[in-house]
Image (cartoon, rainbow, N blue to C red; front, side, top):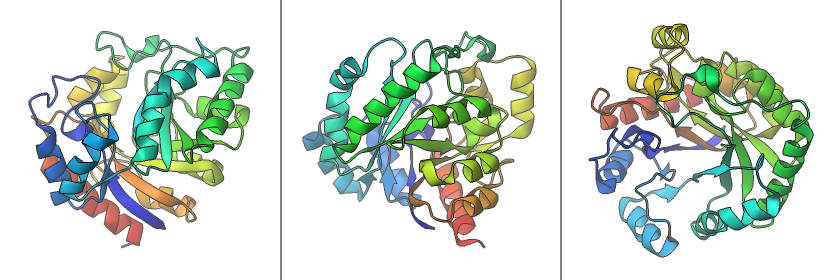
Length: 291
């Protein structure tokens, strides 16, 4: 696999629950990401959103910008309105030399609501799927003209969470829409990340590598926890520290070229970010080498 290893600042400062790591300066996150051995990092809420401000900061730490999350609302507005809303984000990614833009449909999503159990997540009706797929494809066509491949992030608490929903998304969208395979979200949703990797190997455009603590996952499912309570309880961890079979995932996508991103949100007061980032990168590098 011709890949680069990156990380996400969510292990240092959580985007959806900002009390987690809220006191951690951006400079600490970047310095520790580099110390852990990563060559790139995704955006977080503490990052400047103007390339003239962001580029010197990342250069100082020897890090490239991998990409950044964007919340779409295509179930509620048309593609033209969506493009207008996301243009500053696209401009930043283009200026920073990124190759992918990460999107997830967040109309009605509950992943940021700590009081909402996951059973209350929204769903796409059978009648909505064709139009949603058409709009997402149009969005992917538009970002491709900027040199940015649109990668869709299936995510707990959103309309695309389960294995069936991921398959439907791929069936209803055109070739400009790629899949962001997130091993942790797939596992928590009851999907098999190895099966997803095999089924959609030709359309996987980005990979988030997070592991899952099986006992925590089962406890959270039993009590129908919210997504954020699950994170605080420690459902996610870094590769090699949980139940995900990463070597089998990588074996299913031998032609993949791009970033492998350690994105494992935890409570930094319980899981030291530098320790876990270093462990995750070392484990990931070993598994990619097949050793």
